[in-house]
Length: 120
Length: 396
Image 1 (cartoon, one colour):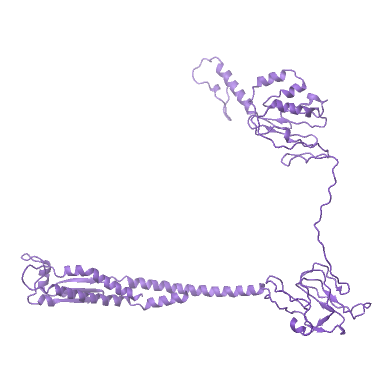
Image 2 (tube, rainbow over the protein chains, first blue to last red):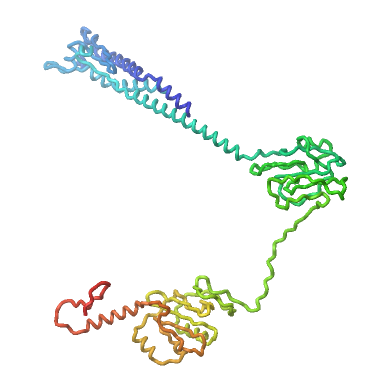
């Protein structure tokens, strides 16, 4: 019992949960970026729910930024906000929120699984 | 950098796992320290217990004889050693056994098998002793399995007329049952004790059949005379209706007996009939002739009936045949010559009996008279009709 408790305490102290979770979060953010860019790859023509891929500016502006335990997946292009939220002359064509909503559960699952793997 | 984004999705990590793991690690460390402390205390306790057990632990049971006293060596019978003293501390007492024609004396320590290289051992090896048995000390292999008094074996070659030299007797640790006097081999003989159960002495036939004295639950304030009483039937009482007349008829022969003491039977309506035995001479009265206390009693009668019956002259037997059912005191005279004159009525000896039936009757009559009185001219409730209670103002 004594050895078991001491060994378990030592192993728990050696676990690096924050770095593991952060790395997994960054990885999932990059996967989300890929998903967003994939949604912005529709060529012009026909009905569309997402913006068309014309010049590729919006497609290339999708990036991630990390600050502590927070990772932001966004775009620096001013067109991105217009397309996402719409204007008085244009209906909204969200390309970021819908993808993030669909991928949110998978991201949380992946991060949790990675942390749980530390205790095995 | 994040502010540069015009639009974006924020993925925030709420890490509660790291804090939980740290808390668990601290708890485990505390548990480890507690285990260390407990183990240390347990070790100390075990050391103390080991010390105590080692003090209380008897020597290990051995199938081999342990020598604690002087070693024993074998010498020939014709040797100059005049006597042998074989002592046993643990063997139970038993009749002395005939000693073999060999003499032993103290010598170097040796195991029983090593001590007798030539002749085989005359006595079987002692059996393993249970651990609870006190330490075993056997000095010779001929030690009997049961403890005996110190035995001095005299060799046959020794002069029977000359007394053996005085050898200090080693007292066994366990007090022997028999007298610890030395026994010589010449006088040692198998003794068989035939223990027979001690037969009780034959009871002397009693010339007069006696009956045990009064039951223990009955008061017996006076000394009991040694007067034999004829045995009476001890049949158990059966619940039956109390027939006072039959009871009185059964009591008549008792009146005619000269040695019968007064029997006072009292009963009250407030409780089941109570039988009170008042012996004069201490002679117990068999309760088999008395009515069962559980039997229902007759209804109480009014005082007028009692007084009218009491006023009528009757013969002594008629008095017994027509005893009042309630508030009766029956006294049996000691001798027929005394007759009914010795009958005592009412409580005696300072006893105060308050008959609830009489009180109730008195109260009813009082209320009856008060209710039948003509009105005094006033209207309303007459306080005299209400029964009084303790402490109430009585106004007539």
